[in-house]
Length: 306
Image 1 (cartoon, rainbow, N blue to C red):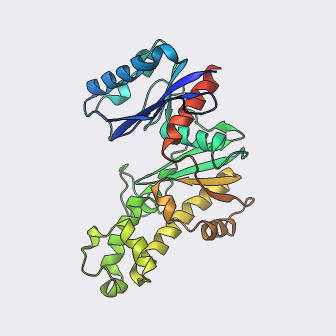
Image 2 (cartoon, one colour; image 1 turned 45 degrees about the vertical axis):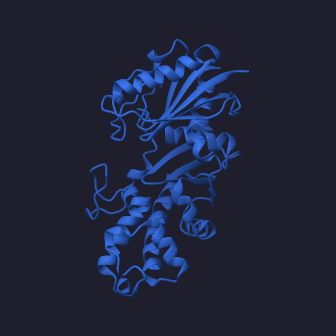
Image 3 (cartoon, rainbow, N blue to C red; image 1 turned 90 degrees about the vertical axis):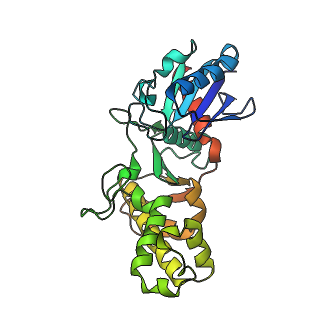
C-alpha cells in the first residue's frame, strides 16, 4: 500500500490528510488558517510535511493557479494567496516526490475516479462558486493543454460588446454571469431596471445588498423579481454548458461547488440536450464535496509515480 500526504491550499484555509492509492483517508483531516505572508506559508508547508514525511511515499498539493507541465510550480498569479506564491518550487519542500496540481483539475480527477463521473471516459467538471473553475477528462486523461493551463472554462466569452467586467480584467466572461458573484451582479442590475422590483419582497433593500440566498428564497415566495433574476442567471449558465457540450462531446457534465444546490438539474439537462449538435449528456451533481481536491491530488500523485 502506498501512502500520499495530500495538502489542499486555499485562500482562507489549508487542509491536509494522508490517503492510500485508492483515495481512502488514512488519517483525520486537519485544517490551518492560510498565512498572509509567503515565508509563513512555506514554513507551514514544511511543518506539515515534516510530521508525515517518514511515513508517506509521496506529497501532493491541490492549489489555485495554473500549474506547469512538470507539476512542480504555480505559474499564474494567485491573488488570494501570498505575494510570491508562484515562485515556490514545491519539489524542494521534501526529499519524497512532490506533485502539484490545480485544485479544479484535482477535483475533476476525483469525480472521474471515485465520484459522479465513474465509468465516464469523457466528462467535464464545472465548479460553481464565487467564481467558475473546471476540469476536463478526455478519453480517460486529464486535459492540461500545451502549458498546463487548459480548462479555464470560466473565461468562455458570452458577449462581444463589453457589458460586464470580469475579475480577470476582461469583459463578459462566463464566470462574471454564471457564478455566485454573477447571480448577485445580475440581481443588482435587474433591481435597477425591472419594474417588478418595485413590488418585490426586497423593494426596501438596496440593490447591492441582495444576495444569492435572497433570490432563491424569493422564488419560493413566488416573487416575480426573484424569478426573473434566477431565470436570467439560469440562461447564462445554460449558454456556457451548451458550448462545453458541443466542444467536448462528453458523456456527462458534473456540477460541484456551492451554487450547485440552486440548479434545477432535470430542467437544465433537458435544455442542454435540446440545444446541442452532439449526443446527449447527463448533468450530474458532484459526490466528492469539499475533499475532492485533496483526494484527486493524491490519486494523481500516485498515478505519476507508480
